Image 1: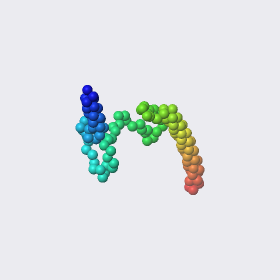
Image 2 (image 1 turned 135 degrees about the horizontal axis):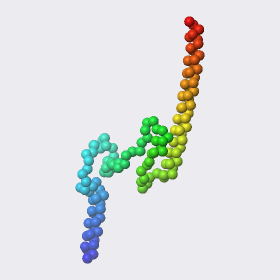
Image 3 (image 1 turned 180 degrees about the vertical axis):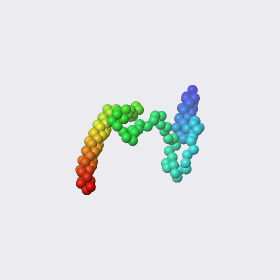
Image 4 (image 1 turned 90 degrees about the vertical axis):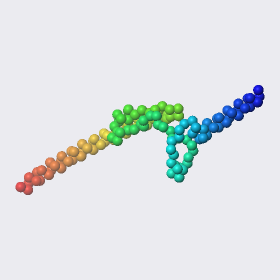
Length: 128
């Protein structure tokens, strides 16, 4: 009986070692074609992880409303949600302030352009 338990322990240890190595993993699943080591860098035997969720991206012309709609996936070792929310709130506020400043500068530019064109029109009328 003890011989059988020793034999079973050896078989289990061998099976665990085989499954944990790249040789055992290759037997259990089909490996993808890899580039040579010179171009691939360090080959540790692990396949690249496959992303199961789409990336979280903001549009190129992000607005404060876009930042409000960003949602991150939850994970076991993810970011603290309160910190992410705080950063997104700060980003939204910064974008809103920047958009307000740009709009006020555009209004000032249009007002100055209107004053210049009004000043140039009588000067052009004096020449005739």
